[in-house]
Length: 363
Figure 1 (cartoon, rainbow, N blue to C red):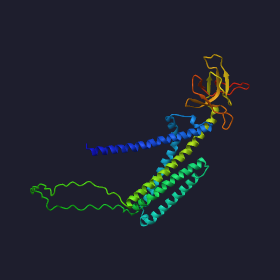
Figure 2: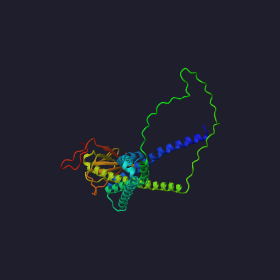
Figure 3: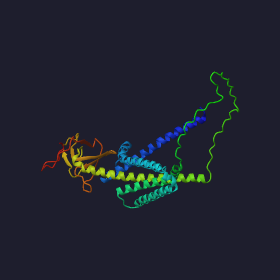
Figure 4: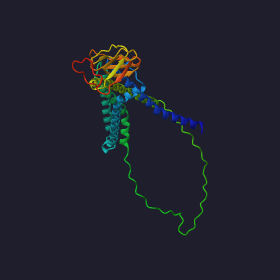
């Protein structure tokens, strides 16, 4: 194999690897970023700094799938709708009326696309400039920016396709088969065949020189550069809109998940904490029980707790009666078996009886 052929195969292989790896790396980074935003919003609802909670990359990717999946589904549906609209527009350009008035049709479609794109971009940018914006409004503004950028690019490409479709001639009908002609030089039945002379090449084969592409100069080169700059700007605007929309969705998703956790506290299995030393644990629904004075065993038991997260060598616990904006705070304990032990109840504990100060540690 020649060096040129090997270099060509290597270049094609690297190109395929780049096409496959680049989207995967981008998607992984997006999943990690949006999962981080979601977790910060979730723990921020409990007044816990996001720097105190640190999960592994795999955990963040798993959490990010639930945030990005609805947006990816919306993008796929929007792409299919855009493809159907494009095919319908090209089919409409082949009608006889569009062929007769193709200039008017092209001008009308281009103007409609340009005006729609300008309105969508103006609406999205006006919402982006606001200091306070609601999550639903921010999501709609991001969708308007994305649609406006896509329509702006399509407004540059649609006229060329429409002109080509309008000026294209309909396929001609196949001609009827011609009658069979008799070759007068062909041998007749019963007549001996004449020997055919050997083929004599007229001229020796001359190798064709390799095609040398002509480098664009002047207006052609300037036009290509303008197209590249335009597509770069459109891609950057789409990327900003996607980041903005997914950030808003991640924040809303984290806040909703935190509210769901608080609402389901009375119906979830509780956690029991055993400690060798007395812990300053307070909160609604938390009770302390002294087990004994043996220094080799855990001496105190705390019930009425729920595990919020286990991360970065810490246990984040919620009292059973925790309320957003109340006096109860999130309890942070070291995740060290020499200090505390964490157990979980097998079922939801019953509320204590009237007149009993200790909450039930069993079902």
